[in-house]
Length: 133
Image (cartoon, rainbow, N blue to C red):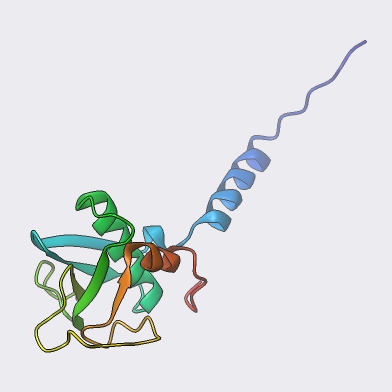
């Protein structure tokens, strides 16, 4: 029995490109930079809460070795980056900012200084569908 094989390089390449972009989440839409041993900033491709929290979660877990139960606090709402002049960043920390220890919020807003999520909760931003795609 003879089996004829067909190979379409263009079709294979298109399928690979489409499958990769369909699975992409917010993990590739941020950059994070350390500020000191307890704080860092996240620059998002688009100014959206989910992207900032995704970046904060990944940085706290992979670069700082924090457990999923660790709380991450907003220290500075979107504003000038300390590490990348001309960029907009959110500064995060592992301890609450002074004067904001009692912030109780049911939102993931990074505009609220003192707002916090656990590393695990913040990771939800990595798969959250955002308005930018």
